Length: 605
Image (cartoon, rainbow, N blue to C red; front, top):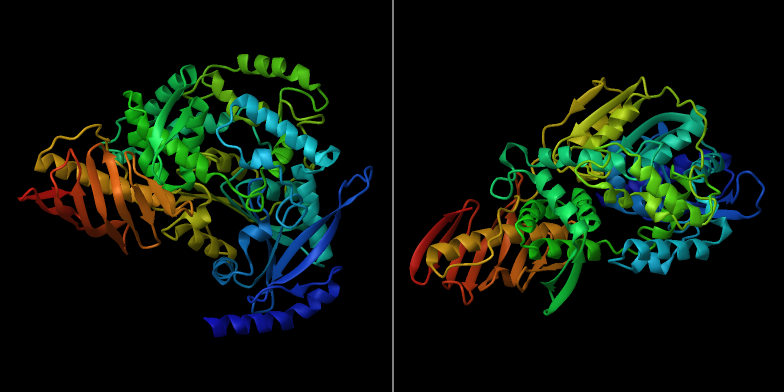
């Protein structure tokens, strides 16, 4: 592999010379993969009324053959720098992109306000967690004040103009666009502004150009169907009979009567966690990025509906703490600056802050029944209108290019379990492209290209890029979950061998899901519900004093068996605790066997 990539880098250097001569900016080698870097200076204000400039960090990688085209790689957020996200200096990332776009020149640059392009870092909004609506609005306003009057120049319209500036600076002709999540909106915005410069468009987890919705209505309206599909065909058997109904009931109750409770933390001790309805919606949505969290939630929500809140509070705490990112990873300051410029709010951009809440309330009150799906009108606060109420003028309704969209090949990918950019988004965008295609991957969440463990989505992309004939709409086979869905969580245990074995089986499965939570969030540990921890590695996990049910404690080590999904884990666990019959059990693909208190037991997994 090393020799192959050395050859690619050498050929890229030779082949790049003609393009470099045409480019308006110098490029220099900046990585072992052969990636070239440059700084492109863009106007702060493309209208020319406000002076100033923004320096954009650009990366470009040539193929090992004469380029057949150029693909701009556009990350999401808003707030992710595309160069930082796609990592063209990393061999594994390059291999994935070159497999998808054979023969293409690859370009990625950090959007203004992200990564190495004038990073916006608002510490309060970046690091604060568990904020109330009022506190969230306050730190958003503080961020606006920190950025200053130039905050109006971080709209999607400006990001789209930057793509054109980079294209021209590199001396490129027509380009392809690969956008992920918010990057799909930015790709479409560029296509509206510069239709003659677009060759083809690939959209992964689609955001229409008219978004964000002020109240997040499309997300809320589609959620019930997505959750029920997730649990269809008995996939949540033993956890819930109606996942969506449970989520709606618990969220509406929590909003009316928020709950505060204690959870165990991995390092020992406890932590107090507060939860309301908006928190639950946030955790549910975040599960489309984390198969472990998705596996845990149905049983935890069902338990909460029955009054047992501890499992759900633990998941909320894990989700919130794992969502804390550095500004380099995702600038929340840029995120609010872009969304508060773009949003289609129930006020005009120059409406005084003091007048906005009444306009917000009137707009929500005027919504028809069902506008917020299975939730009450309170769920309107999950949208960007609530977040941006105190954003200084101008706020909202920054227009995109007039279009029309180019009539070029377009492929949209969406996951069947994508909660934040549901399939309905992609369907609406498909209608804008006569040469468009839509492929849905059931069982996969957000960011399909990298999340699809079956490889179906990347295969479709390769077919499309090579000009294969595709149907207008298609669906991949349903991708099984990475880990099994957790079944009902018992609150107590009886001290018999059979009862202990049953609890151990449930704890092992829940430990597998906890491993998934950690590994898909880049974490190393997560706490047990009543003590101990899971330590996660790329091949399995260890349990140290791990307890799902009071008085039943597990220690041991399990490794997953490569092969089909959901993953099967094998290993050995030692059982102890005041409510357990002690012993040692062997975990195989399908059974839990061994001896507890001198009695042989065998339980199906």
